[in-house]
Length: 519
Image 1 (tube, rainbow, N blue to C red):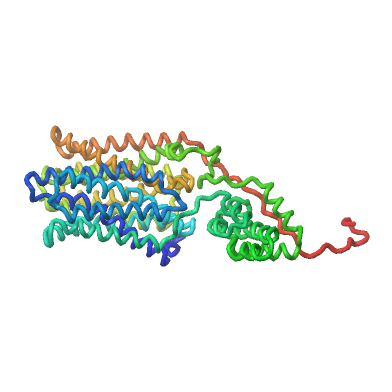
Image 2 (image 1 turned 60 degrees about the vertical axis):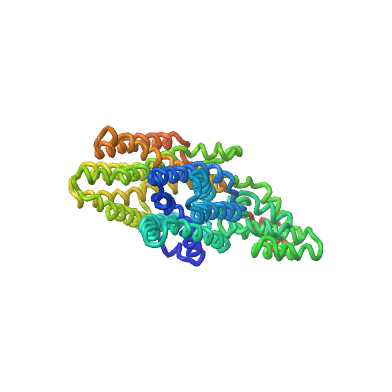
C-alpha cells in the first residue's frame, strides 16, 4: 500500500480533468467580487453574487447528486459542466448586465456542476485498487489544497492586470475543457450486485462484459468483487450461453460476453457436455451477494430508497461539515484578529497560504501508512487536535505562533476530512457514493456559510478572538453529535460469503477399482 499504486495514465487524466472542473469553483467567489467592484456599491453586490453562487452549490449538490446514475455518470457530469460553462461564460461576456441577470448566471454556475465533485471522487475509486483508495483520496486532497492555494493569486492577477472579467472567462474555458476530459475516463463506476452474471447467462455480451470482471464474481459467490471471482462465474455463464444458443449466436456470446472467463466456460462446456449444467445449478443455489452491500460488511437488508440510504449516513455529514467550517471560521476572522493583535493585515495572505500548504502535507502524510483505530475514533482525535490549534490561533499574540497553529491545524483538518470520506465509503453502497459525496459537499458548504454568518454577527458584539472561541465550541458540539450518531449505528459484521463453485474434472470417470471403496 503506497502512492505507487495510484500512479497511472488514467489517474493522471482524472487529475487534469479534476483541476479543470474544480479551479473555477475555487476562483468564483473572489472573481465575482472583482467583476463588479467598480460599480456603485460594487463590494456589496459582489458579496451578494458570491452568496448566490454558494447557495446554488448547496442546493445543486444534493439534488443533482441523487440523480447521478453510476452507469451513466459521464453523461450526467458532462451536462452539468456544460451548463456551468454557460453560467461562467455569461458572467464573463456580459459583466455590465443587470444584477438580477448576473445573479441568475452565478446561480447556474454554482448549481449545475455541483454534483461533479462527488462524481469525480466516486470515479477515482474505480481507477485504483481497493487497497489504494486511501492514497487516492489523499492525492485528491493534495490536489484540492494546491487549487485553493493558487486560485486567489490567479484571480487577483488576472482581474487587476488584464480585466475584471478575465478570471470568469478563464473559468469558463477550464470548465469547458473538463467536459472533454471526461471522455478520457470510464463511463461510470461499478455498483456491485448480480447484473454481471445475469447479463452473461442471458448471452447479452455487452451488459455481462461491462459488469463481469468484478461484479459477476460478487454475485456468483466465487470471489467477492475480485477479477478471479468474475472470471470463474463468467466462465460458467459464458459456457451456458454458447451451449444453449446455436451456431453464430453462440460465437457472438463468446466474443462479447463474459470475457476470458466466458471463453474458458465455453471450452469446459464443449469438453464435458452436461457438466456445465451441474455447475450452473450449483451457482444458482448460492445466495447472491447483495447489490447494496456496504464495504463495512453491514447487511444491506431490503432495498431502500436512495434518500433513506443517504439519510442513514448523517453522522458523517455532520462531522464533515464541522471539520471544514472550523478553519473556515478562522480564515474569515483572521484579518480582524490580526488587527486586534496589532499585526499588519497584509500577513493574511501568507498565513492562509501556510494553511493550504499544511493541508496538502497532512493529506500526503495520511496516505503514507495505515493508521491505528477505527475511522470514527481517528476523526474525533483529529477534530480535537484541530480545535486545539484554532483555539491557539485565538490566544497567541505573535505572528509566528499564529502561523504555526494554522499550518498544524490545516494538517489535522485534512486528515479529518479524509477519514470522513473513507467513512462514507464504508456506510454507503457503491450506487449511492456519488450522491453521498455531493450531500457532504453541500453540508460542508452550509456549515461554512453558517460559520461565516456567525462570525459576522459576533464581530458586531465581541472581539475577533471571542468569535473564534465561540466557533470552536460550536464545532466541538457538532463533533460530539456526529460521534454519538456513529456509535449508535449497527456494528460492522462479516460480509456474506459463499463457498467456491466446484470445477468438475472434464475427464470421463474411469471404471471402479476392485477392492476399493469407490466400487
